Length: 140
View 1 (tube, rainbow, N blue to C red):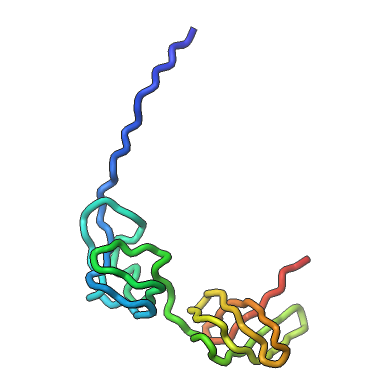
View 2 (tube, one colour):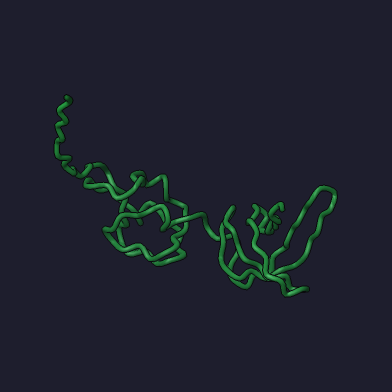
């Protein structure tokens, strides 16, 4: 016969440095060194170094003293809503280039919805470094 002993598990908060907003920062602002600070305390996320966020754009309002989450920030927008953009589609030897209108803001590497100005069709693509949008069609 085996004897099973169960010990209660105690939840202990982990204390580490946490990156917080030094002041209230509006949405769509580029973060600078003066906008963030590191405080000791229970950690709410993986961000603990100002170098991780300086130069990135806020996706939401950051409130003073509150931790900054990875989902709160992202690369600066390359495309604004209603911008005219170049749509690029390539499949083997076939290459199609068209003009579209951005339906939302997006940064480098983000996915953006774009309406083709000729066909009025809405497509989704990835923002490239030159500000164009690469359209990919799922394989069936």
